[in-house]
Picture 1 (cartoon, rainbow, N blue to C red):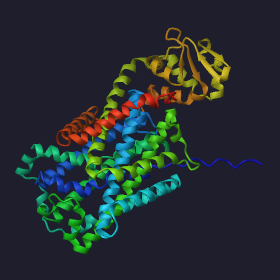
Picture 2 (cartoon, rainbow, N blue to C red):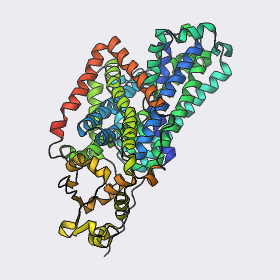
Picture 3 (spheres, rainbow, N blue to C red):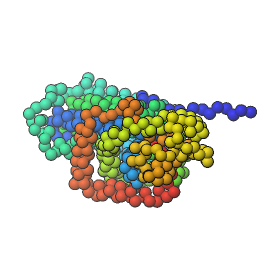
Picture 4 (cartoon, helix red, strand yellow):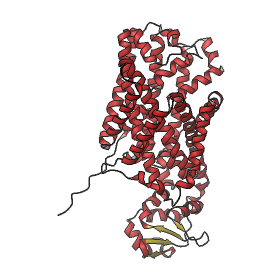
Length: 539
């Protein structure tokens, strides 16, 4: 009896990816940052301008990662990019850092905030209990099916932005502060160039983190070479508009002296607009709005560990997926880490230490675009090599034809076929890309048997990956790949703000920054152990 045909693997589209990016970015930062910023800045116009600059930083990062995702359309984010661009040790360290600082830490932070807001509505429920219950429920939902994960993410994100729209509606209808307070003044322009503005910009920077979320699930995305980059750009622009609108509403809904230093801005604003009971109800709504952020990071985080498990045999246990294409083990491992962090760490320690490590990773990721551009420029003169283009055409063919009929190809005598274990031996062939990266290919599946003889043995099962490498570095393909506009201005602007954020963190929170440095060094030190019997990452 014939077995039933295998079900096609489900993929997610652009809308879900945009929702994922938006939900990751819009967390508890939007409801807490403004109160702290008002301690340093008094002008509403200056504050809104700094939020716009923070959005511009996120957009610069999104443009850079859109180019990276177009050239390397695979899951894993920084882990995959850094392994291919820099070195597997840096990629492995980035994978560990983004798993802990980019997903585990933010999940713990958002669930802590959920517990605090939830207790305002139900005082008899301890915040720790509600936090753990929420993380458990969300993790269980994401263990069911990719379609369930996508639907749950879409619904929770939609409800979150309905809440944001409701806050904006209340502010526009019942606001008591005149709109003219948002206009620029001479004092506002002077305040913009004060050192306190740099400090305030950092809170905007933290609030915009998460703009690279969809790069971690690229393998689950349809036409990921285009969709992932578009979702980063659209999501970042959308969140920037939302942040500007919401902060403007907050500033005209209550006097600044009542907002200054307050962490639960949403409750204070709602109390001013619709009364004490409305403020309590708003606290509950904000708490439920955080579910979308927790869900987004619960979805993306395990894909990093799964990608690492595919290439590092020590972590191979995490690469296994369920019948529904869910990284079951990686998801449960992340859940355990979140619970441990909730039980052992404080909000400030998690926030500062994880952000320090994460900023460094994002900075290195954005600068990767400059590295790739320089390498592409150095290879530009080699693209006219005829045998290079012919090799590209051959490997567009069927793998069996490539293995068994190589002698009949256009390269003729330049190729010799070997039927041993379905491999091909390419003789006397000069490929500039393979020559330049021969050392890296030696550590991968491809065996280079000498630079002088140019004998390249290519395992036939890896022909598709090799074809991707070659096609992405030929003129006719490169023209279709997204390229960051105004290069290198977005990358340099992002780097400048990131360096300022790192230096400020070292200056004001040296202990937490030290913990972030320990995390980075520990991740780097783990590579010799994790790389034992390493399975190479395919191009």
